[in-house]
Image (tube, rainbow, N blue to C red; front, side, top):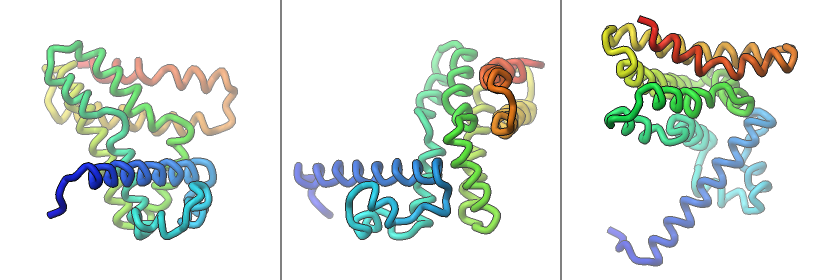
Length: 204
């Protein structure tokens, strides 16, 4: 077992930093240019390092995509929201923050591009398809838990159904906003989901 010396700790921190830089660049390439343009050469060029330096952290494109999906699954501070749900904090406030910060990521233009590429990959890659299912399950599980605090008199099955509807609301509106709607109409759609989600959650 390697001793946890200051030098080793420093190498670990540096390694984690480089790994995160690679993920940021990879995500940016997918967001702006699509999955087809994602390559180790492209990432290495952006970071001004050798291709082998990128592959040291991610030996395959599959491992890189899995890491990106894990990043999306852990988007923002979900643990904070889970913690708040266990404390005596306003459930409505916690719910609204979660919807805006976590589920709301599905609604941002760059994230929509990322998820669009994920869905395309999932049609022929079983591992990515399973990862995508787990990602959405995490959103729905968290929302279900928060909805039970807002609406404690309905069954867990009803809470899960509401959570699924809310996630679908964000996904569907993301598609609508991507169409040729006038900017003012799109802006209204962007502002509406959190309140709509709260209304769905609290409805008995």
